[in-house]
Amino acid sequence: MAGRRRDAGQGAAGGDLIGPNPTDRGKAGTKQSLLVEAAGGPLAVVIGGANVHDTKLLAATLAAVIVARPAPTAQAPQHLCLDKAYDNPTGEQAARAHGYTAHIRRIGEEARAKESRTYPPRRWVVERTLAWLSKCRALLVRYDKHASNYLALLKYACALLWFRRYDRLAVLR
Image (cartoon, rainbow, N blue to C red; front, side, top):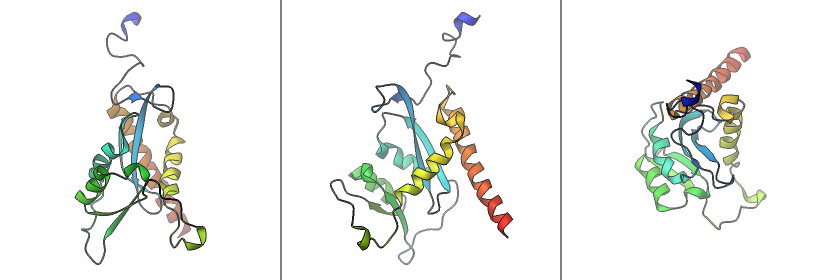
C-alpha cells in the first residue's frame, strides 16, 4: 500500500546517523569526516549526524583507515594536521592513540604572515577532496535512508577518485 510507506520504514523521511544541522535552521543532515593523504587522496571516511562534534568522529576516522600504514618511528614520525575544531584534549588524545604527531591550529591563534610560512597551507587539500566528492549527486544530497548505504556510496566515490588518479598517471607514462 502506498499510504503505509513511512510506517513500514521505507519512506524518505528519517533514517539513521542524521541530526539537526546547527548552521541550516535545524534541518536534518549528515557530517562526513574524511582523512586524506598529502595530495588529497582519501584514506578513510566515516559519517555521523550533523550535530556531532568533529572530535567525536576523529577516533573513528583514524580507525577506519583501510591501507596498512608503516609504524611511526622517532626518525620518521607520521604527522596529522588538524584545524581548530580539534583543539581540545579529546582530539589530541585520539591522534596520540593512533600513533600520529598532531599539528593542531590553536583556538585564538592568528594565521601566520605569508612571508614567514615555511610550509604550504594544508586545510584546502581536505576541502578540495570534499568538493570532488560532492560532484557525485547522490552524495551532495543524501537520498539514502540507511547510513550503511550512504557510507557505501561515499567509499565507492573515494575509490573512484583513486582510480581516476591512477588512470591519469598511467596516461602520462
